[in-house]
Image (cartoon, rainbow over all chains, first blue to last red; front, side, top):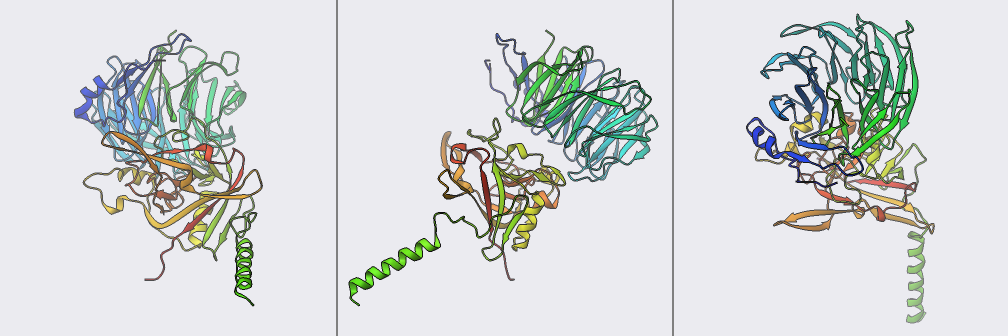
Length: 340
Length: 249
């Protein structure tokens, strides 16, 4: 693998530096004969990147980071179009399904809504007593869920918000995990699943009411992911494993069956399902991006590539599945072409 | 008694006394902790922790120069759960970070400036507005690691022994001894960071002891931990921490 030119990963990003950053901050690795992915390396943040999300159309991408910023990217040009300032580290940022809004959650428990097009902040509220580690929009875009905590426990409540054009209001607060919550997602039927430091997934019905807690790992469960049909789950954990779960059609909403697990050398932090193929991407503390085949309910490693010497915390597929994006401690965004 | 006999007697006494005080097989601590416990030796003013050596492959600053926030000595558990940075430590201590904090407090060591990781990020970096409160502060501490070598002899080394620092002067890169200034700021336990870090190679509020030569987080010293200087992976070692406490008015 040959590096064509050095990265400027410590380039301090601000709005005035965006143009030069965009020109200089790119680094391309050529594909090698052993079918390594072509990876573009983008100097994005000065601090850890915790979450990446694509808009449904694939035109925009957002990155949330410990440098108190969220960057909104134009995917076509690979340039940031907005740098959204926060008062503390930003652990979560997700784009509304209709692409008008962006929601962010910060280390001081602040939830914000931003106009995705203009970058204007349209709503801001102290939502949790402690950090917000994750948030998610429902598939219809009418609700937003926020979770978090501190290292020991803190405010781990699940809060569900009614989303309006330029505001949010809490419609339900549910007791959460015994330790901090690191993940939340909506199923297409409106049910919610949260993952937390107590090693469990917690299920809530479409009204937000708690249904069931299921122990899924031997240590903290970080981000989790679900397929669009809601039948497959994947979880990551401090216990160094990735686990694949199927969900039966049983009325018992939390009826999960562990299908496979892969235990690696380091904690695993995030997973993402391919939008159309039966594939799962994962990242973790070892700085490797892995792609797994899940077709037979097993985690079969298709490819892995070391992207960073440091931990990777975020991973996402582009909506068309052609790009796989990962980021983490070094503040860079790694964009792998997985179209082949 | 002739002068010659007196000299011989004195020499014998010195040799005997010397061997009685520093027997090769005596551990460098009056008591060793059982797994899962700490020894607080109030008479000697030191804390002894039980640890195992692990060699964290592919992590920053392990056999290669780099920057890192994670300690080289840290705990397997912290803040009521598994320590987030446990995979980074070379000396993996088997008690929670909070037990190390309590032990140092019981020896009279006191933190004075401590922050959560969130607050630390706000205060990071060296610039024209940097104030003394942008440095983690507390009583100074000295760390060492000791173990039984392959011959059954006890060996003790300062924490600094394992690490080399790299600095750049006029574009020239130089290597120098690692000369951290470790202070007991206690942040990781007070603010429940959950990292497990004990003694960090930079000024990081995730642990409980930091090198505060620089302000919080940046700049970070460029350091390399030489694993060839450490005993093999899996070796039982002990980490000794001696605070220099502040007493009186």
